[in-house]
Amino acid sequence: MFRPLGAPRILLPILAFCAVYALLAVTVENSYHQLTLTLVPVWAIFGLSWNLLSGMTGLISFGHAAFFGLGAYTVALLFVKAGLTPWLGIPVAGLVGGLSGLLIGLPTFRLRGHYFALAMLAYPLALLNVFLWLGYQEVSLPLMRDSGWAFMQFADHRVYILIALGLLLAAMLAMRLVERSRYGMALMAIKQNEAAAEAVGIDTRRLKLVTIALSGALAGAIGGFHAVILLVVTPEAVFGMLISAQALTVAMFGGVGTVWGPVLGALVLIPLGETLHARFGAVLPGIQGVVFGTAIIAVILLAPEGLYWKAADLLRRRRAGSGPEAVPQGREGPAAPPTPAARTAPGPEAPAILRAEGVSKSFGGVRAVREVSFTVRRGEILGVIGPNGAGKTTLFNLLNGFVRPDAGRVLLDGRDVTGVAPNRLCRAGVGRTFQVVRPFARMSVADNVMSGAQVHAASAEEAREMARRAMRRVGLGGMEDARAGALSNLDLRLMELARALAGNPRLLLLDETFAGLGAPEVEQLLGVIRGVAAEGVTVVIIEHTLHAMVRLVDRFVVLDNGAVLAEGLPQEVTGNRAVVEAYLGSKWIAHAGD
Ligand SMILES: Nc1ncnc2c1ncn2[C@@H]1O[C@H](COP(=O)(O)OP(=O)(O)OP(=O)(O)O)[C@@H](O)[C@H]1O
Image 1 (cartoon, rainbow, N blue to C red):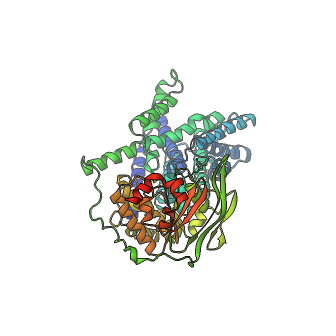
Image 2 (cartoon, helix red, strand yellow; image 1 turned 90 degrees about the vertical axis):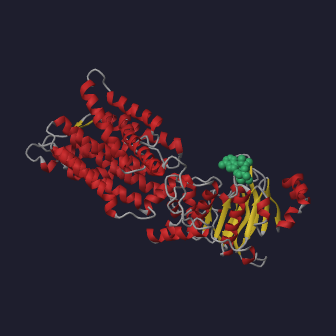
Image 3 (spheres, rainbow, N blue to C red; image 1 turned 135 degrees about the horizontal axis):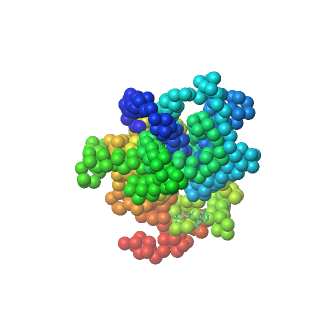
């Protein structure tokens, strides 16, 4: 994505695939095979719809049948009750699917992980019973022999294949554009780390709602088309577990989070299921369910991310040989860290950029942060230290809006920003890194960094340039195309720093940036952070190890048990008896005496 491929290189394989499929399909005479050839693109589109929500954002949905079924019933009921042709019914089904996506997303996005997945399971099951209760056990589409074309009823079933293929082509091209757009990049950022995505300015809730609406619209439309092919809709056939499983299985089998995944999955699994059903369906009813179940188990065991990624990994390994993955040559040396003399610590007269005023936060009975007040001066490097559990991370979360304080205020440039969402604070110039770096391992370093620039840039090109600049600032110049998954611990930290810097924040909050690094790596990172501060960025850094911090920060705030224990210059703090007793202990005294 960083080095844009020309549009023809991306679109050609899709066009070529559809052309070959169409040519093969028109030669098929057998009507059963024609049905199978229609169902392949239908399930591929349904898989793409699942992929858009679940593959790209990581929010696993076990309930996509809800959208599919609503689409199918919309087309069937509009046809039967209002005589509306499916040519119009299918777009309406897309609208219904999109709206139901919004309605389902609004409450369900309050949940995360497994809870989200399980809650999604409830919707198609509830709808199945609602439609049974409404008396729509079986809705048949009337045959319109005289005006077949007007009602999407064709004597030659190959027309269905071509329509399904046209829809698939449109869906694949749209998905390809999404993948390469800033929107797609934001979805990837959510999948990678939702909190980090918020912290780089992405309004994750809005984006997830837009995505479930689009995904629902696609599923609804294809559910509507499915009703047209089969001419009958029953609650079990459109809201049943097998339908949701089918969307998930074709995508997981073929490859999660990629355009080709659901297409590959449908190409293998649908003909297999249909053929087995035709041969053994009478003696082994439900054989398709067995095929999908077996496919899921096989994928989990052999290629957890699907066939596409397995093949891509094999190809990459073959190209790279058997050795460890090479980090690209031509890495530019770290941006020469400015000498400490290049900046002078701002004095007490410097204006405040950030102020905490009596902020408190309790979790149940635990008072994590207790009436904490302090000021961050513009241009300084402030260290927040304290033993494990002192409340440092909670304080950061209060400062940049992840957690709302029970009491107190947070002021940015004198403006009350208490409880303002992290994405809005990011837009106001507050950047943040996280203790645990969770890169999108398959994406290039540049793409990872770019996610930090996108909400600040007017175009993808500008975001790319901002990412490039941020990479040079931290010494990752020349590493644009390296795979994030192949980076060393230090480079991962640098990448995280570059992502936070890509949006050009005025204030940078660094959460345990030195965690897990050896002494030479800490030295290098110290130089980079000093360099960033010398450029005028205010830095607040939390750590529980002190040795590196005393050489970096201008001032310390020491937390203990959620409250400020001491505040001052490094030498004042390390000489403060209360700090030494409560936090540093005898080891530090011994060390200081060396
Ligand atoms: N979401 C939460 N629910 C319940 N308790 C929490 C939550 N977050 C933090 N705490 C508790 O609040 C206290 C402060 O935790 P916090 O993570 O802020 O400390 P810390 O100084 O950052 O620690 P560490 O250095 O280990 O990261 C701890 O007792 C912790 O168990």
